[in-house]
Length: 411
Image (cartoon, rainbow, N blue to C red; front, side, top):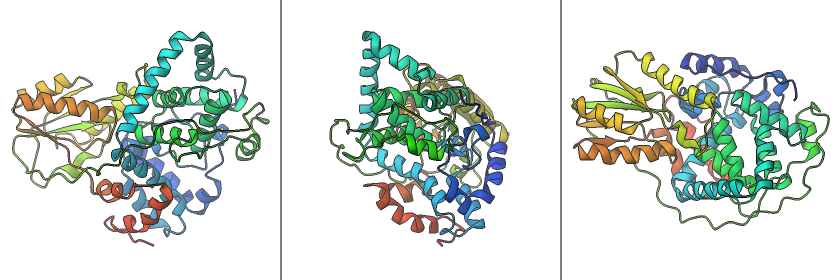
């Protein structure tokens, strides 16, 4: 395996802010020029490595954009700003087409059944997951991901292309491999990114990993990658489901019998509470194990749990007495009932395992006469409605969206 320098991600807001400070000087033209170079052997010096923190909103998109655009004009930092909004775009797209997530999970279950029944497929899948295919670059990326929970964005594209078109493995198994191991894995970015490579997202448009491109943007550290597919025919799939309206703003009233529920989807929850409202208590709900029907990497589960604990502890008693931090929704329902709550407020969770758990929790709480309130951040409310088509149409709205963030200039 390539002698890569494994990045370390401390699951604290302090570490997130330090990473942002370290990256800021490189967020302008340096990022634009070097972002596509995968130098894992040097610890990925050309990219921010902020994605695990932004994915869990340990730092928010607004904070990152504020910091970058306080230093550079939008025209200078355009590429990095677009990268921040890519994740927002994917989430908005999936919010309006949630059936795509359900279809992915159904396809994954079918693929896993094939793995059980077909010995040849199982061997190929296991070799790919272990990084034992004989394709040096691919094997390095697989092993780097398993060891660190991170993979460079360009390498993710190459990896997915090789998985689908060279190894000819079901794309859902590859997306699941990422979801089991990526610290920043989220349903929208991961599922739709794999669909894009496969030609399912932008119908007929695929991504082909080429040896010359890998050599160029890894600066030859793998000594050439041979044996790759030379063609990438789009996979067959159903048309996109009918687009539905994005989620709307929630109108809710503060109540003295309010509890706060924190999830791994938004670990900067103070924005939820109006001035003067102190919750009767705070609890934490984890859904990390729902990212895959298989075992999720301990790196991922430990990161999410430690990050949630860091959030709860960072605020001390600001949110009231500490309740359970658990993956058990019945324990959350019991906490709400025993604390005498009239309502539980939690940041809106986009399509995925957390949202699924919250849907079930909502029914449990309703049985006890308790409301579950899920307000949506203005950042999402402003951006998601523009995710109606491709990203290139969406990015035309970025100057407008930037201008809607308090304190930021649009150019």
